[in-house]
Image (tube, rainbow, N blue to C red; front, side, top):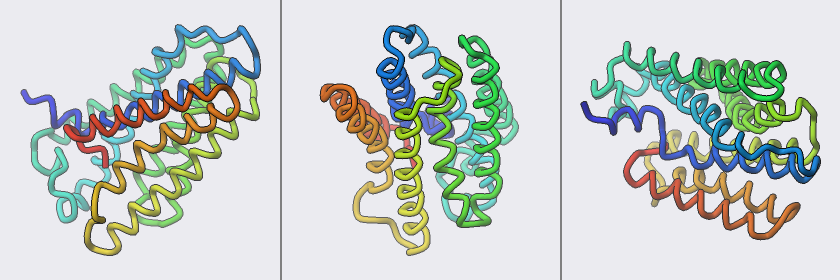
Length: 239
């Protein structure tokens, strides 16, 4: 069994941007409430949010199956390298994994409520994004909720710098999604990998914010995870 179609189905190359979102949230929590962050939760919550992200990507391909037949025939479901039944199982397991991990967090009720909001937002986007342009706002909200899930799971408090970070990613995701939609509307691809580069740029957005409010060295973390994203995209498509 080849593993690459499954990695492509989950858009696994984009996961470093999610990890940067989680890291950014925890750094900002530590800045607002010193000496309270337990850093052991970084890989745990990164895994949880990775599961939600990958589950959303699988669900997206399931919802777009007929559209992809005409417009994106390289997708794993369309090529038959992954069956629809298998994709349904994978998406279900990934979402369940995300919820189970969040339930282990210090503030599990607040975390689970935020995770439920993230799941609903992902599902709404995947079901309706081909039907209305307004769905780009839902995509932005889904990315912003990554920050909220981590924040609620670890503190159950609303911290303004974390919300600012979420708002920045919301705005950046709106821009990214608009640029991607315009590429489809114009009927021909951009010169160069514009969308993959913009996806990788999500990590730099976070790193820039941390450089301003925490320490300049955090920008290096954003750049490193952006580079890791671009490296992964060479082997597994992220768009």
